[in-house]
Image (tube, rainbow, N blue to C red):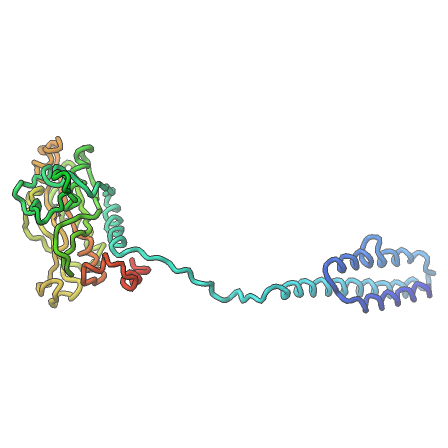
Length: 343
Ligand code: PHE
């Protein structure tokens, strides 16, 4: 019994003097003192050799010793965990990361996508076509007479090698291509770049972007045209937008109308964009000319349709107040950066 008590005292001192040092030493400690063949277990096994009148006393000493051994183990373990955590590189996880420089969408792309999205909700799907066109798809099929100003050599870029080829002057050429291969119902939107031989200035450029639309089906009326385009400008500019239609002329539509909206720049009080009228023209439109339908073998007694075309730069100017067309193609990042996150 005395021997056992001395032994326990010695173990206590040993435990007290142990310096916690790494996971391997901790495990060795656990096996030595707390394992199934460890010291604590073997001391409890001595219980049967202890005289009955001292069993209680021995039991108390032994329990204390067991608690000490276990406490040491827990303390060492948790200290090891925190020591491990603080041993890593000093990283402040709450600091924001390094920002990656993000590109931006070009304002023309932004507005083009918005136009496509709005008409997409009305069931219009996107069609695209070549920028180098032939005379038929750009002019003749669209009922553009020989002497129409749009055919003028000064407006159209012709390809030298073959005067039948030209840079399309509008994306109505895509509508022609679709009608050529598809029968009604047709409900398409044609975004794309177009070219006209203009002197470059703040108000004119030799290329710009259009989005044209075409809807051909039975019973399509001018009321459908008005309502569709009214919906479009409300979605694009807000519910407070006002519209007016003015009679106009296009060879491929009859009747034709241009649509104006109230000036988004000055709010109607008069500025250079609306030329002090309070109104800005944003698109041309009309009922598809029966002759054009017949050009593509579509029965004009059965089907009617409407078409429209708008300049993306103009919409963009009214939306984002871009006052010089040349900014769109100069690739000045100070200009382009302003459209980060613009919707
Ligand atoms: N193509 C015409 C233009 O470029 C716009 C337009 C399209 C007008 C469809 C009426 C109908 O000016």
